[in-house]
Length: 433
Ligand code: UDX
Image (cartoon, rainbow, N blue to C red):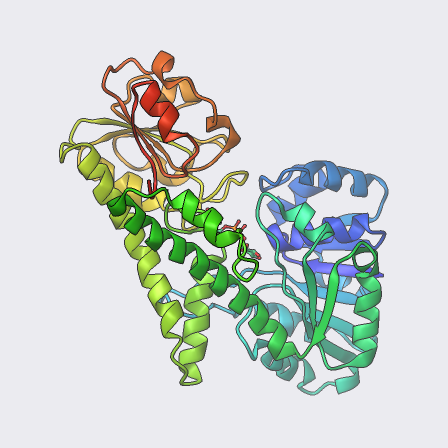
């Protein structure tokens, strides 16, 4: 199959490379010429374990190409995947579909006679497929296009594994011929055990949003339970285990920590409630989740204030990890983007270290410094905040590395055992403990 991935972000790049690895001829196209030139040289714009090797391997065997010539790529492909961004609009509510529709218009103008399957992999609100179809069908034969929804469920940091061993593959189309072609495209994954679901396009679009909203709800739920645990001297991890063993609940996504972040949960929860509002349906539960998650960052900041007994000014605070989760360089909607400026504004001196490197956002903030390693980041700390659960932070000898006598650790990911910390006479706070 000849595939064209439009957009070389996380979704387009990872999916394109993996499809090539499964034996397809793939071209990844992007309007960002600089990105394409770099990709041609094997320079990967994102941090995703295993991606670089897979790109190089498939470039070498000739199955993977990068291009900025959209017209040529569209004309020569059988299946076109739309993988462009759908960020939250400036109004902070609905998804901005400008890029999706711009690409759709281009596809329409370039296709003359050969049948194409057009797939949205980007996360798009219910009925977007209908709108794409409307654009494509304008003055064109309906036989030229089949518009499908095929959402991605890739976690950053685990994206390649998630692509190869998905829990499910969702294909939203009512066209039997298209369904057959796509089932065939995904057959190497289906034969390894992935469940293949064919449903309507609208249902497929909603499956993606409902899944992310549910996971965000699950995290928020355990985060609120953690708040209760802190007041009642219970370890929230015992609750997660006790609840998670119930097969109806399941243990995953029951880890309490800072507010959830990333490129999907915050934007998708906002988008699904806005879509529902448009259809005059009140998704009150998800609205509450959004509010609770927003409050969570302030709640943890209050805890920092409590730990430092209200004396934040001139305190040396170290952040270990600033990304929204480990194994990614992505800063989108990370709670550190609110916590660090807020503490710096109150006069704290912030040192931070993240294995994925320095972050541009913090460069412009006074009193915030990037350290090149854990050692120099924590050396002068009054308080060390473990914000992200990178493996690098899991066995630090705090006592030998920190000069200050009465330093405190605030472990927002519950990496360390509070008992061990007590034994080592280290002042330590976790989440929900
Ligand atoms: C998510 C979805 O999981 C994926 O299916 C979708 O396609 C894209 O969005 P990702 O953004 O990579 O993937 O992050 P994920 O691993 O799901 O974590 C999201 C957030 O939830 C992170 O901030 C993470 O730290 C937090 N989280 C996750 C918890 O706080 N507790 C948990 O138990 C799990």
